[in-house]
Image (cartoon, rainbow, N blue to C red):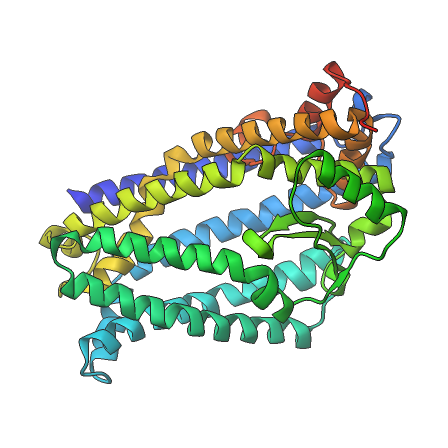
Length: 416
């Protein structure tokens, strides 16, 4: 019964995602030959067509990834992949704890190797074709190796502690496991800007000058404690532009991609930063953390029950139950059954984006943010004519046209 339900949900997810992808392709192609009237003064036809072609190309690759991911998921579960890895590793390790860590790490490693060809294709074919790729094979694989080693260093002790709790902490192990996961997540968030991000990119302080003074004034107006403003060498790998806020406590950091600095004016950069500060000031980060934490708690409680049910293992291709196979099967099954929740999560995220836009508008005015959004769309080749259903299902950010329309209806005043 559970096997049939699993297959039903997998099929539903695959068919839905392929349908939505085809809708996106149709919408973008339908509007390819003319810039929408709302963007006619700011967006050139060549840039609009590049965004359309890039969007379609990404959707085509995404469709291939969807099919491959579905086949791989079935292979790991119903096809007996996890059971095979478990059997193989059991011939190498006697300790139950070591065996569990080895099985999980081997499944992760094999999954990464399977994904590698598509990753190479996306970087050195798709991104290269549209002028975004700036990395080379040496740096690509160096990043891959560093990421793998970092995962090994971070995940191994976490898994060891997690499996120990599952085995020794009694029926409420899932509660203690949740506290462990929450502590680990907060530590990682705190450590990321100072200790992890510099392993992959170089960061330099924003030089003193008019822009830094403008930003300091904005931070003072928004009651933001801290002025650690860094420029990241994103151009080493990609021509895409972005900005983000990371860390907490004394490790709070504001980061601009160097590519972003090249395309936006000082006033537009201030508006983009005001949007990011809006997420912080309106407690969006905290709300997302609480929501994610509660969902994880519910998930671990469910895992605590499922791991005692023989049908859970047998229905997903594992004949010999264990702590590590329970964890792996759960991690693979949960996204399948929670797929219908995606639109709700996207809706919540888009609501936060509108609120952050309003916050930025109140502190820097609407026009600088509008012009920044248009420039960012052009720079990143983001389509301004997405399919509405596809967007509402997936997009964490509202379509640019909707954001601009909302800003335009409430023009606000630029803060001094």
